[in-house]
Image 1 (cartoon, rainbow, N blue to C red):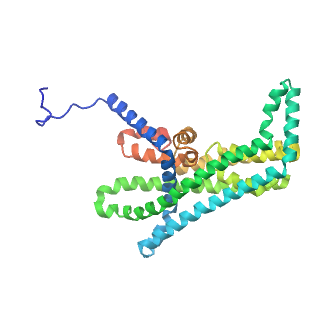
Image 2 (image 1 turned 180 degrees about the horizontal axis):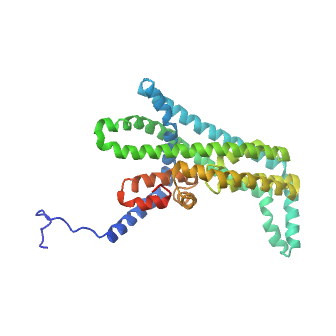
Image 3 (image 1 turned 120 degrees about the vertical axis):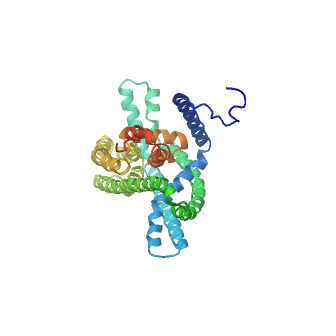
Length: 352
């Protein structure tokens, strides 16, 4: 090809499929690296987007009733802010109650730590090693962990400021985007259908999680109350919140009440709490809930588990809560608009 041939109207040579794949992977790495570097801004943005998607049906009902569009916008913002404030108050209540319990049971924690150290020493560990292994029951260690969580919560509260602002802007823009088909005609219909399907999947996912989370919280709370574990309502709230973290949330919600049961009732009570939690969560979250989640979002169990780890690494702790919506968004953007990626959609859990 002579110099200037392309400029004279000739088409540039087509890229080979292998080279296109390499370019796409390189672009994905660059985008993900940028998200990781800007995770303090990306995570609140993603959270606000998910909350707006969840609350949009409020607007739809008001719009169908013939009310002005600004009424729907205010209703969505008020609903979204109400959800955020309620969750923040629940978590703050749980944190304060947990700190009070640590203060009330300082002597019992010290005794349990000493007992565990002696037991480990009896198994053959050195005295220093057994003492170090039992340090997690020391009140100072638990309060240090709680303080680190409080620091994380402080950063979360700062992020919530951005979330509140994002919610307003996204809600206003959502009213404009709903007119896209009117502005662009039938050509915009496939893309709009794709994103409506994505929004419906996100809402179904959180509805399923909230329903099962409420059931798990009630059962766990009643069991802890019957066993005499202090503050069962706090741990029920924790069980509800951690249910939104796929696969590993149950473990996070189990550790605090199990430790407290060990302090107030010894190993038998701790074992009882673990058995009840495992029974409830295995039946509901492992055997029953995945079927409903799979029907709601059409994601494979392997991809669901991997997405939690992946998005937590990319955007931090909020990635565990937003893993499924973010994975659904990636699939909607990259796979659902490409007829040649049908097998990839099937591999992710979608219907063939």
